Image 1: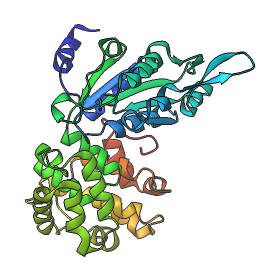
Image 2 (image 1 turned 180 degrees about the vertical axis):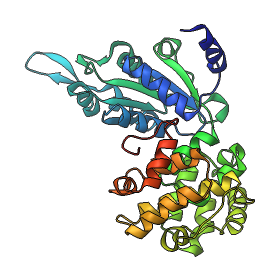
Image 3 (image 1 turned 135 degrees about the vertical axis):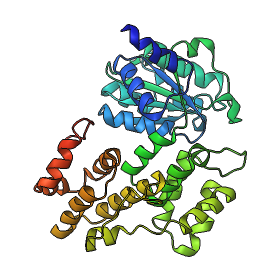
Length: 363
């Protein structure tokens, strides 16, 4: 480690990591076959991070919710082998799967009211990388996740021996990183803009009620908003994020109807993001998210739409970071990037972004 890296260590030790840093650090540990325990508030993205990691590592995800399993579904059951006069352990199918070929085992809710039998099975799995006589594949990795004690989520203290088999990270709530994730995962543009404007308290606020804002509940709200009729919107939002957050969000939505992606892409309307209120981060996030969402729902945009898109990127005076986020979010739209590359203006934009890491195939 270089000497000037010490400041980074001092900053990270004992602190909550944002999504990007947690993703990177945990991937490094798992590639060395070191088991990881990730803690964080309910709904901050622990399960989503495990899913993203499994995809990055190209491993099938085996998601085991310990608190929802009977101990026998974790530790297996013994049955009599009459031929040999012995008891043999029948291990669960998911263990057999992780033994046959590389897999990503995700032990979720590891401290959510589980018994000592659950912990014992998890301990053998993590300590010995086997259950009974069934050994995990050498390239199988193990990650666990749990809530924080202050969350009142039926947290059960883990045995020190089990804790010592993990390395430990805590995932915090970081609106900036969540916004980058949200725009590339198709989260409703208005939700994206609202969180960009209101920040951390809007993204996560556990007030002790059944429904409260969190990265997970906002994701569910987005999913429902994409399919529900207008008369159901308020009721469904309240079921996801609670009454207070719903009222605040709907007030924001009513004031934020100025951007129309269809007018930009179909009619070539220009917009200047350097003047208020269009220079507000919330408006810009909502705008680029709306454009990306519009393109993702139109599999084969007409050529004049592609041309208008290039013109938008060229004339909108938008910060390069937002262009980068937009390009990442549309990189998988079929044949869009190759069509953009035909335009010199786009090639110039991509060249100017060379100081920022572009997604593969975009430049």
